[in-house]
Image (tube, rainbow, N blue to C red; front, side, top):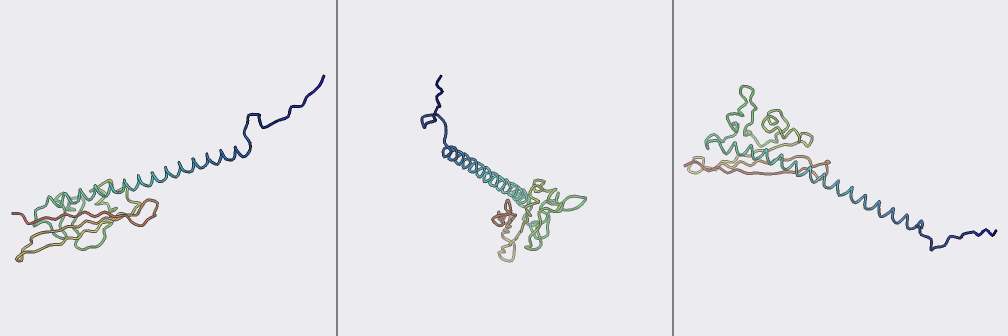
Length: 171
């Protein structure tokens, strides 16, 4: 009986080491690109949610100011009778100065509960009321509401949003 040794040749199906390394490298690259895309998506989603929360707050604030009588729009006045700070109600006012106001204070969280989600991003607002007079009487009132907060992951500085309201004297 003759024993034959079988020799391996390049015709035998299988993968060489170079092919395995190349395939592994391509797989790793696809994996890293996918993880990066998911990470960028998550940051953009968080950023968009922040903008929506702050926009909702601004609209709520400005709509209540817009509902006031023209003479009631003044520095130090509440934005609505419900938010005058009396009997346990939150005190939401048109500020007396142009200082930045922390929106994580309890009054603002009761006014807009969604702001609780923003507390780790240090949201602040600045309200500037400018009055234009004609013949010694108030003619128009311009309320500028600027909000700023920290970006997701603390990168890229602060994000901001500005909304303005102009009211003309009634009648």
